[in-house]
Length: 201
Image 1 (cartoon, rainbow, N blue to C red):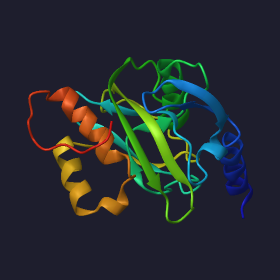
Image 2 (cartoon, rainbow, N blue to C red):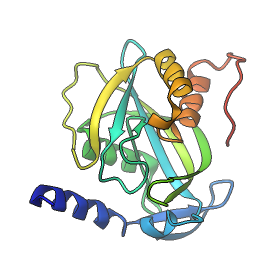
Image 3 (spheres, rainbow, N blue to C red):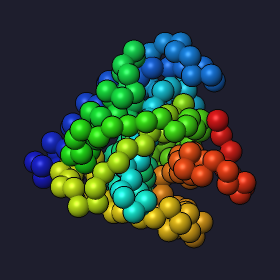
């Protein structure tokens, strides 16, 4: 293993010792554990967030998760994800992760919904069991990004219609939470749309 690769894996592992906030089914805090403990089967329900950045044309920025990720590596997902530390505000935590993952600074965020889900990673044996707050921000498509290769392999802008079709055609290329959080975004943008929507909280 190269020195650079070893350093990336080491930083990824160190984040597994960070604390996350355990919650009940209504999102009320009930305790705290490490990232590692929360994501070991059968999983512990904890608070998380999923951020979408959207440009003036209505496209959203997707990221391909880095190969070093302990859960769903190399799957395409929303702009960034993460966990607030116990007692930390979603806004502070999400803005920090936007800078760390894609180098996007100074983005105003609003919450557009919550999506609770459980997913098992067949390759790593880890699980996601999350009370996931979906956040939305605006970013110019030509904004300069500084991608951290430890976090992100690649990024691309897509329309929501393109994303919907891609999720239907090749679901295994995408993180299992992406359909649900995308649905929450669609409900926020098109509240009168009566089309069938995915399940979850």
